[in-house]
Length: 348
Image 1 (tube, rainbow, N blue to C red):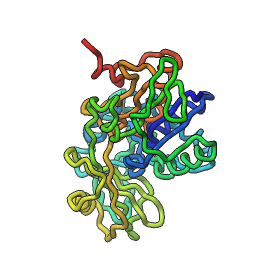
Image 2 (tube, rainbow, N blue to C red):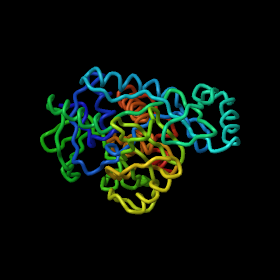
Image 3 (cartoon, rainbow, N blue to C red):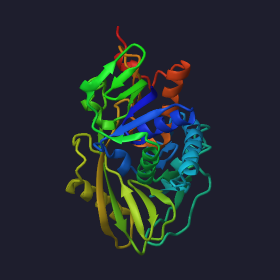
Image 4 (tube, rainbow, N blue to C red):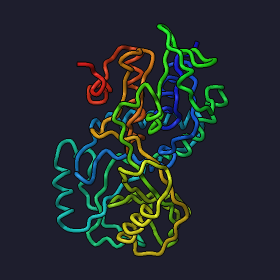
């Protein structure tokens, strides 16, 4: 009998799979490629919400866990996925500079906002007011992570490409049975696909569509991540990932002309050089209206669990939320009330 059957191989599913393996548990991961938000994600980790100059909740704790987590995967399967490079916020006025310094005086933001104004000139960008540097930042190459990790699991006979059939799930007191698999627990980590899951589809997973572009800009000299109204992330060979849009109505993964036009308008506000579009992606982020993840155990079935709602910060949240759920199941450590699905399922 396995310890865990994990349904979904995006950031949430792989975070739980690796957490379980690090704790010497046996697993099987199933995925049908129906959701692609993790593949098209920017993969940025940034402890500060720059639009409002507020700290991400428990950011330092999450960053420490994430750094250890991705470092362990890099060593385990011999890949490079974690790129620690600065995120710079471009200033458009003296007032924005002043807001930055006011924010950096706050004790919770001081570890993450540099007091040194960056005045470096980057070819292809006009920046008379300079930049502010966010510390402890970078990005994870999520597409490579997911592709290579699934290859690793496949080599260990721990992964199947499979469309999960909920009607075939049998729930027993001490285990679950799914076709030929017996496991102590099942973890659903399906992202926006949760809406098809009869055990959890009543939870308020909203979903926010995001679109990104890959552009080629030979005259853009940028070796940091630029974050303004969009982010610009250097990929090498004059290629840059640019995003992202936020659409709360469209729940498809189809790129749109409207999304492209919005991104192009913002790019043209920032860049002073020519560029061409190489590719255009879209995905639906698993977001929740209260901006907190959905983690926990089904109110009626103690063997069925959920890891979802990582939203726009999956790279930072994934390892921490996977650990929290694992510790809850294996050690009885209570989940934080802010992430526990009981905030929606608790019966009066």
